[in-house]
Image: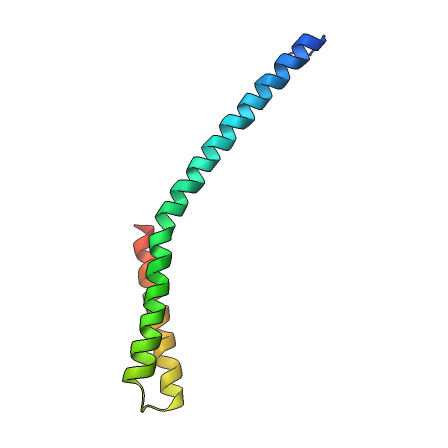
Amino acid sequence: MNRISNYDELVAARVMTEAIIADRKRIIHERVTDVKKKIAPLMLLKVGSFVAIDLLIGRKLLKRAGWVTRLLIPTLLKTFSLRVIERVKKD
C-alpha cells in the first residue's frame, strides 16, 4: 500500500479497511453457522445415546448386578458410542 499523504486518502483507506473487515466478518459468520448446523445433530445423538445407556443399560438391565458392573459397563458403552459418533462426524 502507498503512503497516505492527505486526509482524503486516509478516509478512502479507512472505508476500504472497514469494507474488508465487514466482508471477513460475514465469511466467518457463515462458516460458524455451517459448523453449528453440522454439529447440532451429532450433539443431540451423543446426549441421546448417553441417556439411553444410563436408563436402559445402567438402571434396567443391570438392576441386580454388582456395583462394579453397574459402573463399568455403562462407562464402556458410553466410550464406545462416543467413538462411533466421532467416526461418523469425520465422514
